[in-house]
Amino acid sequence: MRWRDGEPLDISSLAVAGGQSRATAYRWFGDNDQLLAEVLRSRTDDLFETARKRHAGEEGAPRIIGVLRDYIQHVAASSRFKELLDRDPQRVMTIVASGAFPNQMHVISLVQTLVEEELDSGTIAVSGDAYTVACAMARISEAFLYAGVLAGEQVDLDAAIATIRPLLLSRE
Image 1 (cartoon, rainbow, N blue to C red):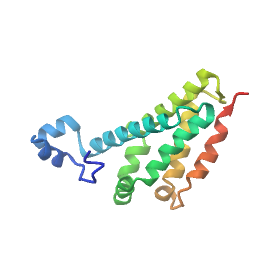
Image 2: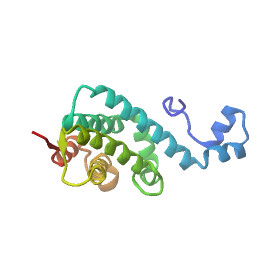
Image 3: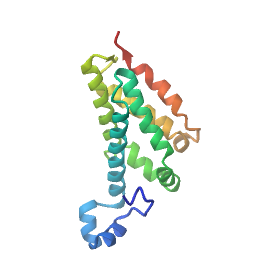
């Protein structure tokens, strides 16, 4: 809730708000980066679940693309996330797009689940296994979503979706 309200997100403020010592809060949550990583993973789960519900009546590539598009559009539009990214891009990129934290693998897992569901129902085909396709989709999304931070380029989510779409072949 503190994240959504724009309040500071650090162990010390949580300890004070919860009537705990800082030492106890650090034992529970780890350091500030671990706390932020957990909050961002939780938000990712919420966003994916909302997008899955929004596209529940679809199947195949349109369903996967719809869920992924909704997710990256929400991340791109999040003023709270933009604020964090602008303030400390290296920290945020380390948390969301590196192996230092489980966040990137979590997104890949969520996308992989979508791909596997559609493969199992026979609505798509992919050239490769579901994990590899999910990795490619997640990393392409990141490349376009974080283009401003990574390369000083304009964020182009439509280009991300256009690049991802051919990875999902319709079954006819």
